[in-house]
Length: 193
Image (cartoon, rainbow, N blue to C red; front, side, top):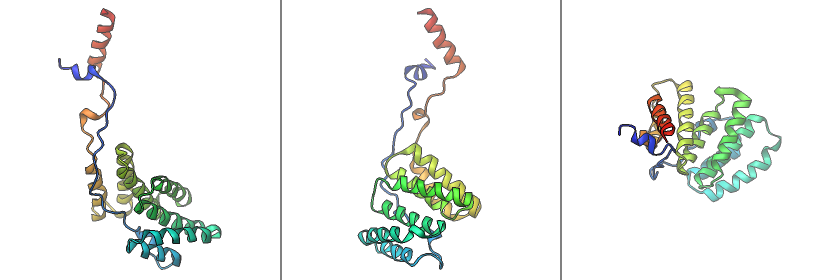
């Protein structure tokens, strides 16, 4: 009787919360610098006005201009494009953020100014799509990156903690751990049969 739940079904079940109160993705602070390309400022302005059609048009124009730019400038453009995609509800936004994160890590390592917003954007995109396990992993990664950059007591980490608290994966929904006692009981039942 004590082991009945573990014996009944060992398949993991994930309950995905319905997430309705996620704030819109903010413009990354790494793109608010005096040396950033003027087109990035125009995209930021369109996003701030919530004029996503104009922002998408500017992103398309920016992509053409950035072909011969420095790797850091291309990362700026890619991150801006990912934010616009996420704000527009584009299902490919998560993949775009993942690409930016990979490129940022390869170019500048863990201290890349693009890595934290890209990983966070990827996590929020996963959360919006109901991909609870991916969101949990990605937002935890973003939280660790935030703490590496700003310290353990920075108030900016609250957004990651709040988002992680939206993901309710309780113990009964996690893959069940089969203890040695349950293993022996199952083995005994199989031998008796």
